[in-house]
Length: 175
Ligand SMILES: [Zn+2]
Image 1 (spheres, rainbow, N blue to C red):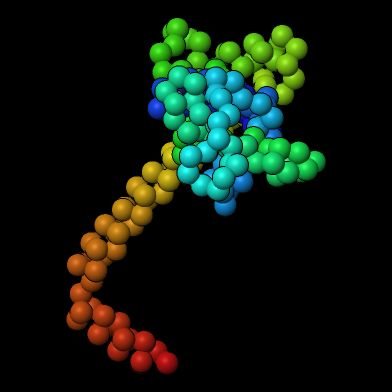
Image 2 (tube, helix red, strand yellow):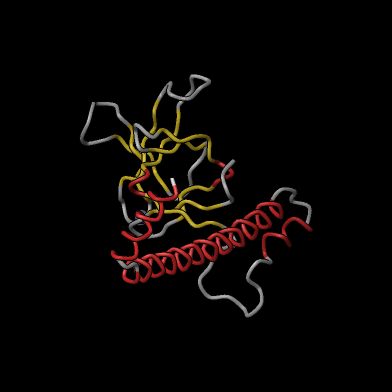
């Protein structure tokens, strides 16, 4: 299940599709498969095989995808968007926010009757909290490690070779 997001043309930011229309991704082809696009036109490809149909961004004319007859699971024409030609915006994320509104928008969506979205926000908050705690533990471990190294170094410096010899002799006589 994809987070709610819109896909847009990387070149001109013209909106092309969204996560509600998302079907699947094909990593080997570097494309995502969607059930619909907007702001794009299907035209005959000038390159490639004759009869190939590509999707052109209506705004900047960049090639953003292609139509693939018979390539969908049901045997119908699949709509592919080139991952390299599109960018995405996840709903509810933005750089500049009203003070104190950091984690609210997705939970509000849940209150409006969109189940699951609130859980996602809660999960993300929990993950962030856990990451912070992990960082704290890691830095504590580092501190302890440094202290241990210092102790080892100072005890090595203080250990007296003659004393050690005496100890060995003492050991030998005792046994
Ligand atoms: Zn464009």
